Amino acid sequence: MPYLYPPIEPHESGMLDVGDGHRIYWETCGNPGGKPALVLHGGPGSGCTVNARRYFDPESYRIVLFDQRGCGRSTPHASLPNADLSANTTPHLLADIERLRQSLGIERWLVLGGSWGSTLALAYAERHPDQVSELILFSVATTTAWEIDWITRGVGVFFPGAWARFRDNLPEAERTGSLVEAYHRLLMHPAPNIHEKAARDWCDWEMALVAVHPDHKPHPRYEDPAFRLGFARLVTHYWRHKGWLEDGILLRETNRLAGIPGFLIHGRLDIGGPLIVPWQLQQHWPGSELIVVGEAGHDARDPGMTECIVAATSRFA
Image (cartoon, rainbow, N blue to C red):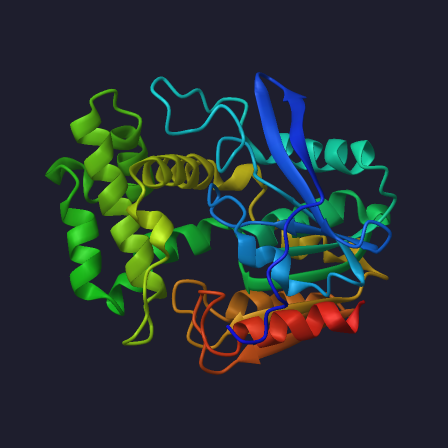
């Protein structure tokens, strides 16, 4: 990824108590007096990566990253035995973002989000438009019922072997219903042999969806059993509740983004997240520009994606 800025380390970090027994990890990088920018990671449950710091010119931006509830360095982690996910919802995450903004003394910030992070960024900007100066969304998703059904069933026409394994790893009686519900039940099972296998099976499917190039290498975090379990639990937890969003609400309320400029960056080869999603958003959001990356799928590491994300942050610096 030659277009990233050089590696940097945080100049400030901490754990913010957000209530409900949750503490979220946060960090700031770059110029303490620079333009504030918030990064919202995907998943749900992926946690922040060190490369996310490198999308921004560290001389121009004050870069804020945090691990959403239950993942990364935030506590308690969703992989723990008897994990309670009841206080881990989209409204909770939106409140956490506001609490973090206020604790850092930031009035307005650019918000960047990828995949699930783009859903969360849209939800935040539509609820708090006065706090958002610009939006940069990549691998765009809005977590509608249609998108969840597509990514767990419909897209199987492009990956028939991987999808058949994904389905057939479930008990036969549960293969015709909601695969999300069936996997979530196994992932929350107290027996390690059951929930660990379900986590591996779920993550194998996730990895298959993004491998659109023959030389694609899965992110090394998928080799960590704790990451796999926490990630799969949170993804299925959010998807079974449709992200706690009224279906289609993010598209219907794009009028709330009036005056907020933004980029929608999406891979043409993103089969799991079809291009129709950002295209429709761009049609309803006059201040946005859609950038289609010809050789990229869903993975931000795919050819052209990093270059476009960095170019977008440079435009707003």
